[in-house]
Length: 250
Image 1 (tube, helix red, strand yellow):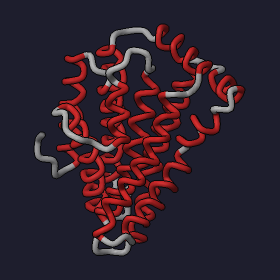
Image 2 (cartoon, rainbow, N blue to C red; image 1 turned 45 degrees about the vertical axis):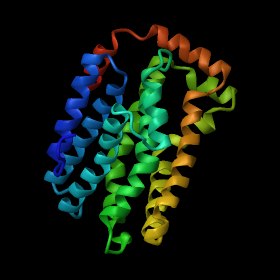
Image 3 (cartoon, rainbow, N blue to C red; image 1 turned 90 degrees about the horizontal axis):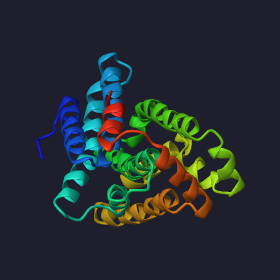
Image 4 (cartoon, rainbow, N blue to C red; image 1 turned 45 degrees about the horizontal axis):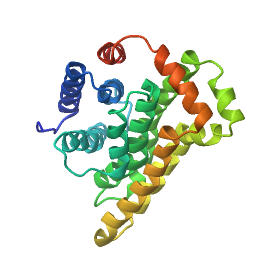
């Protein structure tokens, strides 16, 4: 894996993953393509003084992104990764998941697990409360990603939300991915980590990982009716995996 110390390094490595995924026809490129867009928005925000502390935000972005990038390459090398990322990566080996399932399961691992860890790490030695305003600002950017996903979901299958509500899955499947809940959960986790004794940090992260992995199961095992609907959507998706990645990366 290349050395990553700046946000430009992050963008370059994400592009490497995207191109590798296009070449290999791997669905892992879906999340990488969308993540690159978000990273470009964060870079733009830093350059335009959107954040209170631009250098700190770049450092947070690097720490945050490296958790995903490291997990990606460790999985490629058959090394151990967090359960949350393992569920996301293993989904790429299956035919039936739709593009949006791949995006959501990646977001689940990265926001609900990695973001809190990165926030605690970048605040080490300083009160984590100093980060709160910029933390909320980066989530303003991330929230646009969630909105785009929900819009895409409706565009692909307009009455899917109604069906999910009918099957009582809407609260689990959609509400868990509203940015308000993801943001608050990630921040609470960051504060908890920041106030945890170093000797117990690994244990706290492991428990959080297990909890986040359970949320991932809502995406992969959403019941018979929803699975049938997703199957219909999957058969209706146009273009090769490579073409879909290129579209997301456009």
